[in-house]
Every structure is written in C-alpha cells, then in structure tokens.
Image 1 (cartoon, one colour):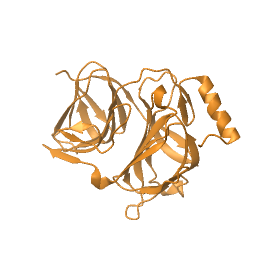
Image 2: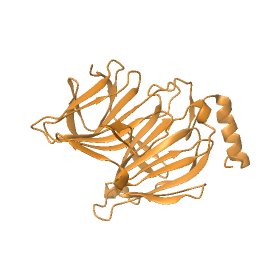
Image 3: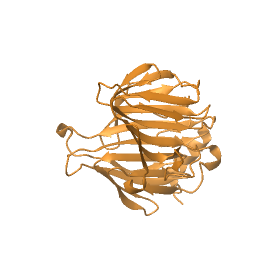
Image 4: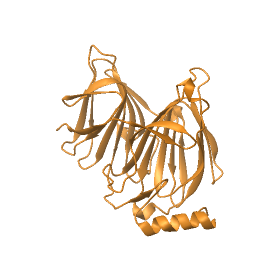
Length: 283
C-alpha cells in the first residue's frame, strides 16, 4: 500500500460567530468546494477568563448540510424547532442532518471542574437529492463510542470502521470517517482510506510525522489523493500527539453556500431566504 502525502497545511484563523463566540477556523464553506464533502471545521476553546460569559449560538437556521458537534470538555445545551432538547457532554457527539430546514440553538457551558469548554464542529455537505429531506438527529453518548487501544494508539471511533468495529454514527451520505486518534510517544498509526476520498487531519495536541513531514499543533493537514493509506508517527522523545481524522467520499456537485445554508443553485438560496421571510421555512 502507498502512503498519502501532504498537499498543504492550514493554520487555523480566529473567527467570531454566533453571539460573540471566539473560534479557531480551518475551513469554511466556499463555492470552490475544495474539501468536498466537508464544508467547515471549527475548534472552540473558551478558556480565557477575559473572554467573559460564553454567549453561544442562539436560535438559527440550517438547510442542505449536516453538523457534527464533538465535545471534549464542558458541555453544550441544545434545543431545536423539532422539539428536541438535550445536553452534549464530555466525549459526546451530536450529528444533525438539517435536510430541508431546521432551527436550533447551541449554548456552551464551562466544565465545573476545569472551568473550560473544548470541542469541535464539522459541517458535512448533503447531496442534491437529500438537501430537502427530513431533518434528523443522531445523539451519541460517550459510553457508546468504541475505544480501540493498540500499540500505544488510542482511537475513539465516531463514524467509520476500524479492526472490524463500527462507529455508532451510521447512514450518512458521505460515508464518512470521523475519529479521535491519540498516539503515545514513539507509536505509529496506519489507516487505509479509499482512493478518491477527501482526507483531513486536525492536529490539536503535540506533534507528529505524517509521511515524511512533521506537523505541530494546532494545524489542519490536507492530504493529496495519491495513496491508499495514511501513516502517522509520534516522536519517541516527545509528548505524543492527538488529532481528529476526517475522511469521506466527495459528491462532486456544484454548491452555493450562503451563511448557514448550502444548496446547489442561487435560485435555491433565494427560495430559502424567501421561506424564512414568509414563515414557511419550517414544516
């Protein structure tokens, strides 16, 4: 098998979203759609007391995409226009398929122990045939996420397959892989990925060698489509590393992103805005 090489490395940029929420953003929705089927990746960490109260993300709409929220520390209270209410706690995942339209609210809360909140949000595109489908949620409790440990590597498997074990998030159009990978010092992780799939790795702790290139946190690694596996090594003299591994099959469709909406034509975006204005967005 052939190791994939690195195409480029993205240095996350600070962004303000919602009601004054500070984020590290690696990718955002663009008409160029270069990370198809992935649209956005945000890393949020409200750990500076000078930031003041966490304002969060008040009720807002989505259409035509899926959002994935993964919490490592702290929690997020959420509610939506379908009547769902809940809490995403440490280690939990919420995979939301917006389909034809949903209104939801996400309000972060600091951990009582550490005083921190730490996590990620990923947006995944929907194919044209499913953009106007029924909204739905997959709520994944931390206890149901498989943890695979082997030779100094610990993997929390949210979606995809590893060593015959499947993650709890299923029936996603992009057939994605989404896993939290932690390497002890001096360990190695090799994972096969189908040719043609988009592959990203977000390094958020430590540093490691991807192929022949050393990558330090905090960085988003974008791989070339020139191999059928990735290989990652951690330095034996270092502190190890931790990264989110994300992969999926591209849809190869034209997209028109507009804020929290991602459709395929300008006319569909205009229709979405018209429905918001006349009160027919939610059915």
